Amino acid sequence: MRILHTSDWHLGRSFHGVGMLPAQAEFIDRLVETVRERRVDAVLIAGDVYDRALPGVDTVRLLDSALERITAAGAVVVLSSGNHDSAARLGFGSALFERAGVHLRTRYADIARPVILPAGGMPVAVYGIPYLEPRLAAAELEVQEPSHFTVTAAAVARIRADLLAREQAGAPVAAVVMAHTFASGGISSDSERDLAVGGLGAVPLDLFDGFAYTALGHLHGRQQLREDARYSGSPLPYSFSEARQDKGGWLLEFDDGVPVSVEAVTWPARRRLAVLRGRLADLLADPALADAETAYCQVTLTDRERPAKAMDQVRTRFLDTLVLAFEPEGGAAGPARTYSQRLAGATDDLDICCGFLEHVRSRSAAQEEKGLFIEVLDRVREAEAAK
Image 1 (tube, helix red, strand yellow):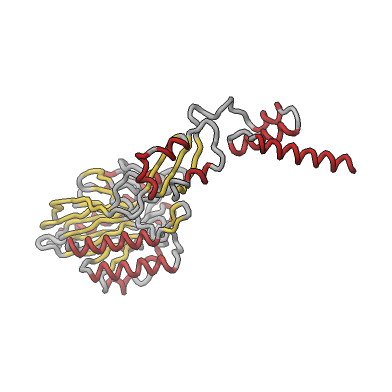
Image 2 (image 1 turned 180 degrees about the vertical axis):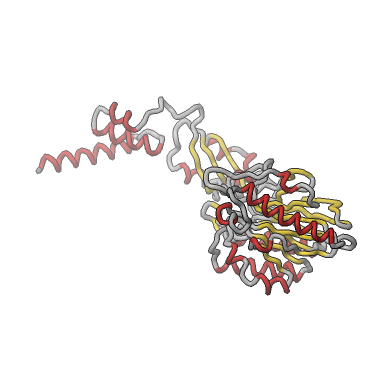
């Protein structure tokens, strides 16, 4: 029995204004190849299949195609909803989808209703915990004081009760639990959103003790919290903080209810990310940065004074620079002053204009710019005198 653990597809997401559907379609191509070549029996998607509650038409079509292709390649799909998904919309038609091998776990009522995977010997039961917003889940899960910990603990208790009933009935199963949450011990990155207003609302990892495997979603970096609990991470990088991460999922092999191997599966993206930092002239001349010329780039310039037309100059070499920041080496040239301080120290109208220009762009006015200011100010004075 082979199970492929994925999560956080975020279909429909854009990356600093660049649409990612073509890259996401390529990732799905590679996933389907993996299912076919490695004879995967089940694909898990542990939340955030979409990037927003109301996905676009093309995004829905991409998921529709992905589910059809995965099942045609011989695997069933178990999909739980994340904090980016609309659980009600994603769960539409779940009873019909189940007949085709696509099992949607978006309702609290289905938390203790596993997908049973025959595995030769002890079957594997996959339980899907949808994202639990504490205030919304508390009443249904009979929790008095809503928090990420209390609602997750209540959901896990339901799963344990179902496992106990199966064992007492003489039909034990090995439990795989899917959960879209921030489990203590995970390492976050910039593209995840807080699970709670004002904080991440982490849950302790020991809530999931005793299960054969816990397939976690929400954090975008693939990581192992312990041998039986892992984040698959997102299949593509969704922030520059993920530039050095290998993207993919985990391939598990079960034998008689026991995971005997866990292997990282990597799907390289067509376009890599590059994070560059330095003075403009150095970045434009450094031969070691040749690979970044075809990457999506985040560039931080450290020149003492902001270069003129900085983005235009950067893009003469790094055409797909999406983010440009300015952090002068050793701090900005000259003592840091607020705009009010600049105004207070201005000696004439020209000084005020040049000071404003320097304040908003972190570079003093060039001589030709000062000339334009002088010309405009002279015209204003002539117009006032004519009145």
